[in-house]
Image 1 (spheres, rainbow, N blue to C red):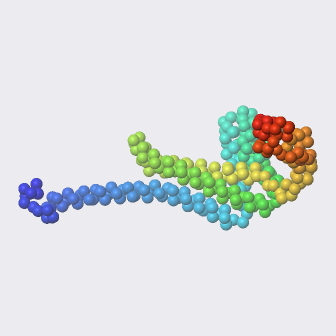
Image 2: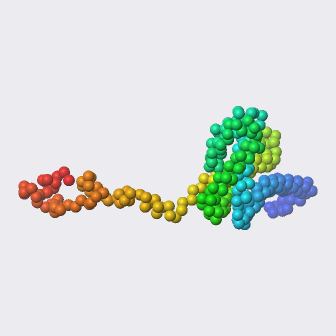
Image 3: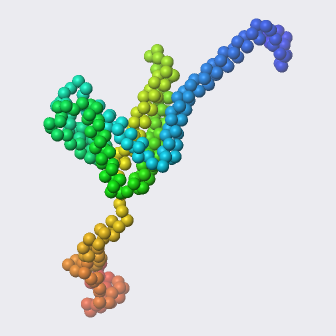
Length: 288
């Protein structure tokens, strides 16, 4: 076409229709790219808000001298969750699953919930949560009396930090998986961005509660070994159990003394000691 028009290579093509078509195409491409960057920023804004909350939690843990009050507030929240989970609001207290509740409380706080049969009738969700919370506080005070307040303050900080970091890493991976497949919601006539924001909020709420559960479980079940305990265990062990002697030969004398061979060792190419005149390897030593 260019040859028929008599145009040479490198000549500019200038026409109002051509210029307008190129300009419209460029606007569409740039607008499409702008929408992509805008959506990316909107998706990233969800993670930025969650990240700021987690970082504020870490700063609070690092800056606080005593995290006992924070731990007890978490214990009250988890106690309320256990009461709501196992105590049906419309059901009578006699129909509640108390064995499963006791197991759940022991798994979380490390103590057995005891409720007299005469007090079951007047229980409500609120009073049950208060009983669990009081039991958790009592169990925690016993740990402080047993191990000391300073070690418990140190454990509170370490357990909270490690739990926040570990759970946050898992959450980032889950959010990446959600983001990869969220575009398919468009086939169901749903806005992928709104679905991502909604499901991301639900996942973050579960994350925060899991952090509290895991940190409290580690705090209430921790066992601190004192320095004198290994030495005390060694002193209480029988002397025979502490002394182990390895021996060869007579098994009946194992652990008492080491068996020694008094006779001279006979090498394979030496004359056999039986007096046959053959080499040891051809005579008595054939099976060795």
